[in-house]
Image 1 (tube, helix red, strand yellow):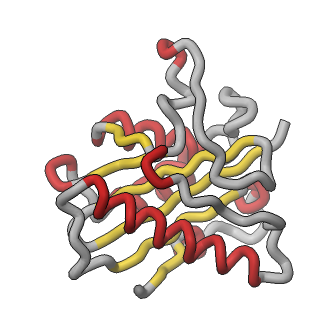
Image 2 (image 1 turned 90 degrees about the vertical axis):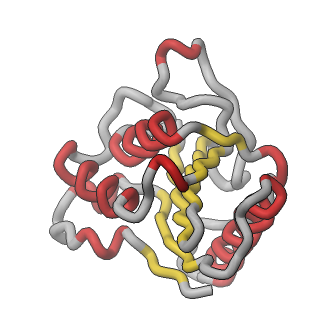
Length: 175
């Protein structure tokens, strides 16, 4: 599977605070030829993507990872397109531990969000997350999720899947 990391494509200025406030990663995989009709097939793809990033992190001597990522299997939660799209934007823009604290400027967050979402449409996209609901959804009365990694206190993974692409986004934070 061919993998393309997206953050580098933003071409943010080297001295931009946004570069240092972004903890996590975003990558796309070409999944043409894979079946995604059933929940089980999509979970298999999520597990494959998780394993690929796990191996990359564990094998990178400059990585923060000690334990890497865990496969969540059926613990991934599916969200409708609009809710998942908004949750992704908030994950890009705001800190996970301090949900009102900006990590990225509005302008750069919009650029990054557009880059990620450009190949996805409401009618043919599945969105999964390791949280039960958005941490930025104040009406939900709290949130909970399964940890992708034990290396960070807060982590959220938001994954988009359509018939030809899987985009794996994860964001990390500490309090």
